[in-house]
Image (tube, rainbow, N blue to C red):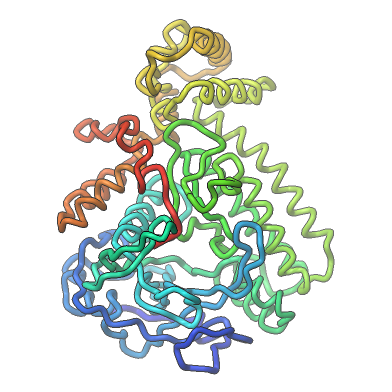
Length: 520
């Protein structure tokens, strides 16, 4: 098994001078060298053919002893030095100080087909940043991260990727809901990839410590390798860098809103500097359309990271990044201009995204009202978001009275839908129909365009939980079935129609389906 190693992060940036793997505060360093804990009996459950190819490997390689050894952490690839990154962050709006890779260990960077991939193991043991944690991960959360990383990519959402999912052979003690009922679960290791895993929190750490020298080193490194089009380091370049990060962050969140994804824990240490979805913990997709929903039990009271608040949190997190970069520019106004532009762009891009979901190409002054009225209808009575927008593509122009029939299957307990809500829907469909009269697309062309932005299949929490339940019994077939299904989320796949359905009633309040925690 040959990989083209091309390390930059741990060769161009300062490393921790202390080499012992003990929990501690780490200063003037971007990373600490660590060795993964050797698992007792690693076993490959699944590997992504696409990501094997992306790093220059093939399926045969994935079944080799060398692959098992390297991507379980049993052995270190020749001439490489694994490390954990140092970063800080704001968690649930509060400064948390130094955090860092407490459960992830970076193996190396690979270059293939002119693309760079940093490769991490998640769940391979403690690091200096593990705090009270053990550095391990359980099968439950590892399946969710593995499946979701690849599902998001195929949905067209910027994301980190996943290479492999393995059992460690070791049991891990976890208190799943932080309620004092800890139990042992199967341990697992996910190998995940991204061009870089640098986060907002990497910059915050140096800024908080007034370590401008290393803040500049990190920023210059990031621009050199991931934003080279911005030019040589300068105050102007740093502002352009911040603007580029803001644009990527907004585009990512607009995609989240488009597919109904709720990240669940948008702390600044979980925000990628490349605008990638990162750290799949207590995430979920909206079942019924609800701006106030969050899957994270830790956030149940304040709902800071609820679906409807994600764009605002993106802005808040960017403000923290601006505060960190400020010392490199020493002017507040350029940052304020970028943050103001984010808000303007959100309104514009959000409206355009909603137009695409409704099959509208021409802009009309009444569109914002049309969207607002639709969202009101969707929240008046429990309606499945994914199914509603997919079924709406079947609407035939000129027949508004039949509109509700087209989306009937998306409505939970339709027999309980009140008369006034049905009447409200009829009014909306009439206005929607009038709006469609301004469009030039045929019904068939509109359906085709809508079905390219409104997925038929997403990784609903109950689907992941079914795969987890089977995997706990040693049956991994459903992991592969869902992995293949979610490669083509916009295709009809009639043979997989059983997955195009509302959340079953048994999953409404089931742990893992409606309630999740950061425990992994």
